[in-house]
Length: 222
Image 1 (tube, rainbow, N blue to C red):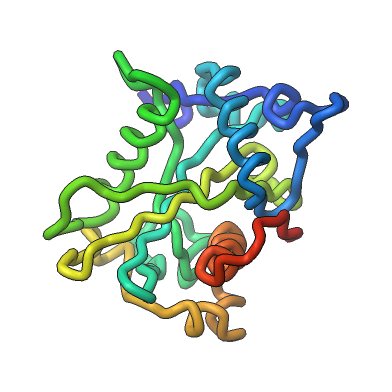
Image 2 (cartoon, helix red, strand yellow):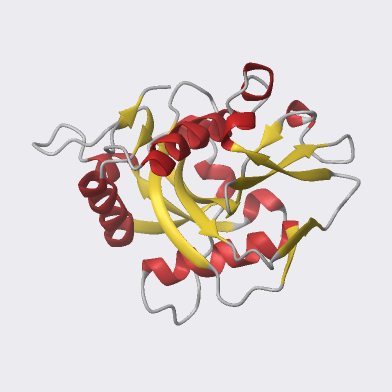
């Protein structure tokens, strides 16, 4: 089965955002208001369906939920740069903060959160080697939506922070494709670094600034 024939989880855009209803939650950029995030996650859980990936990529009437995890250890965040050995040439040299991917149905899953967690664990294990840690501490800190790009129009990111213990060690699996390093939030917000980030990673940094300061949640425009 080719990559585009893979059956993936999607949510109809109208059902997800509640378009043209009294509770239309459409947003651009990052959504961090806890009540809105909880409602949007509930709508994903209640309305998701399975679609061929190739069809979903061409149909903006559907959104593909993508778990997008940021790994934190103390006050540092794990970032990686895509090298020439990777498959997506448009992203070479770009910095990324999140690890994630498309979601598949999980047999006998208890609920949507279980499905998301299982898919995220698979993605993390494919990209990274994480040692000296027990069960990962996963928490949702927001959602990412970027309807301003062709790729963004058909995806929605579930922005997740994973707090790792100090003894944990991380390395990338495919060193010809990725180069990983730890960076502080101050480093990530430096102009020359921020401008090299993939779009979702830029949105993630915006959300992390608020999360680390304990500020009020809000929608950040892209």
